[in-house]
Structure formats: structure tokens, C-alpha cells
Amino acid sequence: MKAKPEDCVLLVVDVQERLIGTVAKPENLIANVNALVKTARLHDMPVLFTEQEKLGETVKEIEGRTEVCKKMSFSCCDDSGIMKKLESLKKKSLIICGIEAHICIQQTTLDLLEDKFKVYVVKDAISSHDKLDCDAAVERMRDAGAVITTTEAILFELTVKAGTEQFKRMLEIVKERRAALSR
Image (cartoon, rainbow, N blue to C red):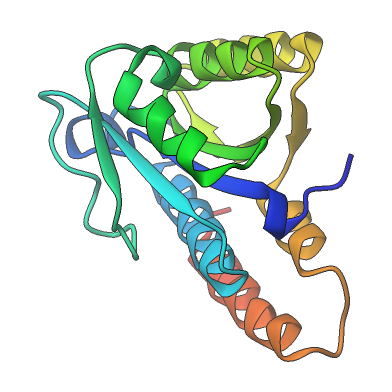
């Protein structure tokens, strides 16, 4: 049940210019997504970004954008390019974050679960325009078999133990994230 870096891909869904201003606490979402991306890179995990056509680029505040897949479908799984990329990575676990929870995150998660992927949804790194929509999506994804977690929990889970160089670097990511969060 625990996420292991060697088995995982981080999927960052549609954290785009035209959407970010419509979701609850966008600054927290950005801080959490950045922490996930930095930790994935720390552990040499693949990171895949998606962008819904016509909604602009991934927000500039998200660091480390490299591989970006454009899509028209709400579910990332309905895009053959994204699925080919996932298949080429030969990983069966995905850590998913982004927006909107009740649309693209939920549909992608349900499709991934149906395709027998293990899915970790990072609850504080997803958002919707309305809290009720986000909460309902989290419940539905959990009921379907997704593991619901938080940014800080998954950062420590991926790092496994204290006292290592990776742990020290991850702690800096955690401190930076905590400082960026609005309460």
C-alpha cells in the first residue's frame, strides 16, 4: 500500500493559467504541487504535466515543468499520447495532483483504477471551484479504490527514513512548503 519512488509517476493535471484563479486557495495548491514535483525529482521519479487545450500554460510558479502533454479530453486516459507515455515508463502507480478535482482528476483516477493502476490522490494538492465538488470527488475516488493522502504524508512516505541526504533535502522542501501555505 505504501508508495515507492521506483514504482511511481507524478501526474500533474491542468494547473493552468486560466484555471488557477477559479479554485479555492490557489497559493496552497501551488505550494503543494511544487513540493510534490521537487520531491519526485529528488527521488528520480518521472513527472508528467498535462494541459487542457485553450486554457493556457501550466502556471509559471510551478517549478520544473519539463514533459507537458496537451489534451482535449477531461480524463488523461482518453488521450493516446498520455497513455503511451505512461506505458513507456512501465510504472503501475501514480501520484496525482492538480485541478479540477471533480472533473479531470476524478475522471482520470477512475479510468486509471479501471486500468489496474494504483492511484494516490493528494487531497491538499487538488482543488475545484467549489469545496463541495472537491469533497464529493475525493469520496468517490476513495470509494473506487484510490488511496487518499496529503502532500506532507506522501513526501515522507517516498523518502522512507531519516538521516539520509535525501531526507535532509526533503526537509528543506517541507520547510519551504510550510512557509508558503496560507492558513
